[in-house]
Length: 195
Ligand SMILES: Cc1cc2nc3c(=O)[nH]c(=O)nc-3n(C[C@H](O)[C@H](O)[C@H](O)COP(=O)(O)O)c2cc1C
Image: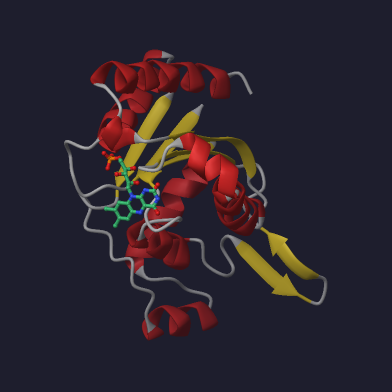
């Protein structure tokens, strides 16, 4: 299978970076093709501009957006790896969605309503939080995030959500606990490849 990993974190020493490397390594070991889009490393511009709207009205997209859309078109499975910032997608990832998951590419709207155009594409989401699991579970924050990202973005575009994983309390746990999470990432890689 063809796997695209969309990764966003400014710090190459972050735990998210370790997750991304572990996921890419395991998928490669399992014999899959893997491409990584490290949004900070490629200096992706996340700001949706007037020029983007003008292009979309004439059925086109900016050259940098087209590069990312071609990667999506290539992939069978798209994995998002990023932290939760202010209870949602970091601005870099949100801007990537704003610009790359564009009208006419990821969805269309006509007399029949909204139609997702990324059917056939599968998505895995791996997020980290600073907040401990029991707090977000108790206040319903996981459900809020699942609704706005899985329903509001990925299923809206007709993608199949394979799994959405939260690794929690990252800054406050032990190295051994973080190492255990990376073992879990390898298991997730194996599981999604069997779906
Ligand atoms: C700008 C910013 C906003 C954050 N907002 C949240 C938040 O809303 N909820 C939360 O649980 N953690 C939040 N955090 C903590 C990060 O999610 C946490 O430190 C990160 O997931 C740990 O992974 P890392 O080591 O790869 O950065 C925030 C961190 C930053 C820098």
